[in-house]
Length: 288
Image (tube, rainbow, N blue to C red; front, side, top):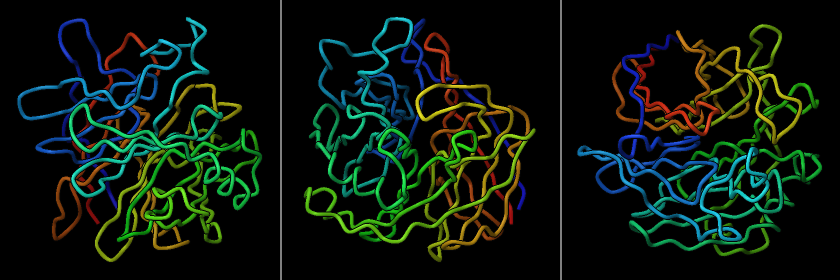
């Protein structure tokens, strides 16, 4: 497997207004909905530009959040996005109680927030983690099943892993049955383990994940990214891992643009880990 970066474009709402902390992406209308993990608005990327779409009510009066302003603990932290009917389901990371919520975006400006705390606690129990170790950063849909990915953290002894849940039961806030976890070793870069940051389903129910080697001690704080890769998974097996050239890019969102005979074309979004810097959009091509 080989990865090519065909282009990189900075994402802006307008002059001086960056798309900040891009953390997930999914098809939406005639474009793509990009979550900002430190804001209550997403970015709707369309052929004619980028517009704001509200995906959550303000939290204690705030619409953007940062460590510098002492509000980081309030952010919804939407880190995964999957297409659902004509809309998009955004899922919080689960790393704090505030982040155990989802937003079901059915149309621009129309959304329903759902408290999924019981589901997150069941996923944490299935993974053998304390709730504050949760960092669910990716999700891939196959039919009515959702494979939900825990981002690993080697410094904390937490491997990358995934559990399967029933999507209808999750949205109905029913008692959730969580499958036996799958755990993945994606290798290291510079002594830092690659950890899953997002996932997409391919034909044959194989899953392609993005991964970052980020040197951070826990599920909340950012750290330096020393490398990035894509990995092809078949159930609990890692079939191939390929470095993303240039960068290193902290790819946090991944979506399929098209399937080709010898591979797949993707759109990815990159978090700059700087609230004043614009996130990037990458056009990627993967060849088998």
